[in-house]
Length: 407
Image (cartoon, rainbow, N blue to C red; front, side):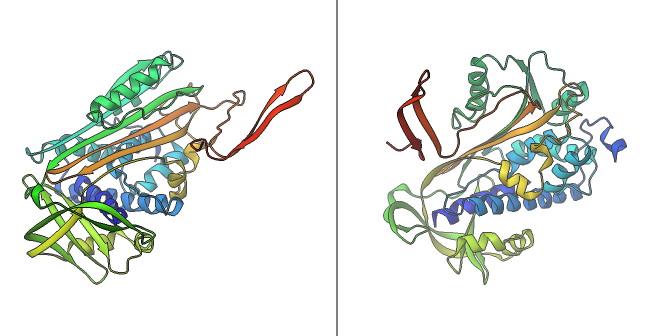
């Protein structure tokens, strides 16, 4: 059931945060506020992307708790889109479901999100920040810099990527913009790294109708393997926005003045993996359209969860393949450096208690320069090791590491 709760945090955030060559070479600066039809368009496009991303991650890691920020990933990819060209541009645009929009219209939507979401509810704190970090001396296109600076309000920073202290600078920027909730997100700066595009989101909301701490009780929770675990349940009797559907039951709890809320869904058949696999944006809308307000009683476990993952494989599965290969075309970022995306790092923290919810999300897109001369080795799966004497090649120690975290 914890996974059910985390799943609904994802979908709630998805809905609430989003509720030809001539085209690409135009000046992508923000225009006036998009019309109402564009507001509904952004809800649909980003909702589709959020569900797609959840499904692909769950296919790869079906036994794990999952919580992501579709908005954070979308904004970071939106910045990258402005540097992509040819098939690379088309693939990123397609997975974001922006096929039918021009580059200018896409940037207008992101600009609208960045400038309106933080101000919707004075009782709910939402902070969205972007930055672009490039290796000192690198030649980055002025047009790309001006676009991410104007349309995405990105801070532009030049730094020495060969200096180990730059990792700390980037991590400190992420920490300061997530209220220290996301720490040490970037582990290292690999050789030939030219650019980082980074997004952070910080959300702090108090329940419109808070839970009484004195009523919080201990209880049993049945995990994915139907084993009992202990947890603390918040309880409340009230008028609730209830979701009653043949597939699910659920509730929508508002924050502050009601501009933001958290949705909880519980599938009727107890099979969360099948539920996620068969979920669609149309289904999601169908569930929300089933909301009725009535008296009820709810028990919700308090939880805090942290999640960190690479989005490379899920994004490849969605069709964004060229960006990660030698066939990548990011010539609108730089015509001097031949770039590809080496990593898309994503990290989130979500905590709910009787007072409300605090959540932080961050996405880092790492761009490296293609080179046939750079040796690269990532010991990120089981490996063999040996200690040898080099003159005789005698093996003193020999072993296999299948889990570095195990003693």
